[in-house]
Length: 322
Image 1 (cartoon, rainbow, N blue to C red):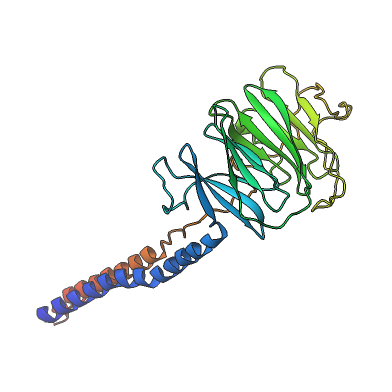
Image 2 (cartoon, rainbow, N blue to C red; image 1 turned 90 degrees about the vertical axis):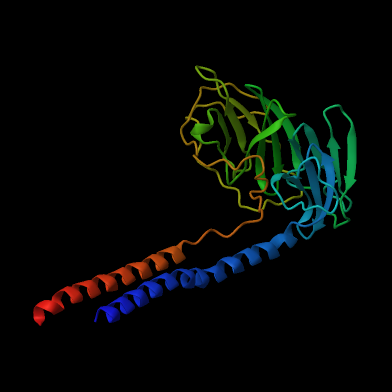
């Protein structure tokens, strides 16, 4: 009897242990499939990679999405043929043709034409040009950048295009490092940013940029965006959003008008960061880890120990029944 009981205990324990690799194998296939799918999507980001200095490469594309220069951080030892599918610093295209990174001034020139060129200007003023692959010309519906100093060592670049108003916030140091970007889908910095920067009426025909970078009783600065380009149609319907400032506030003008600070109506949105160019900065993704296998394995072990406990109880009862 004892030999049979020991044999059953060993059998149950082995069955419970075998559940662990079985469950892991069962859920390994979807993760592998997801990673393979992510890898196959790299064609959307592949292009002509050129080293532009400061540990950065520009991946130059000009396909159905239009001209694009994806600026990626690869390190100072990168050479042609090495991988470039790494961290994205920023992206230049027809809607955002200008940015700065690691002391380099980056500008996508002739963006509306069939032969755009990336111009990279170093801190010492020297410039290099990198032609993009030839593509299709388009109507340039972009106005800007219009520069605006907003205090606290920060500046803003205002743009208008068929996609709506956009603001690129820059901070001093590191050659004008990007701080954040505002647009119709992300019109305001969150309160945690420590400053006020927002687009008032971002979906209207006359949006206004407001900012306040100093504390205390400092006033809010306001400036109107450039007029919407003639001959271009917006990709959205003009609507008048709710005003951010109180009634009686002076109407926005082309120059900053000083008004009392207001915070009502401020949208709390998690900042996208300087790369969010397009909001989308779609970058390569890695499938999330699925812990379902661990749960299944745990359930198998619990069942095994339950069976073991039942065997022990049975062994204790049998002598009393005899």
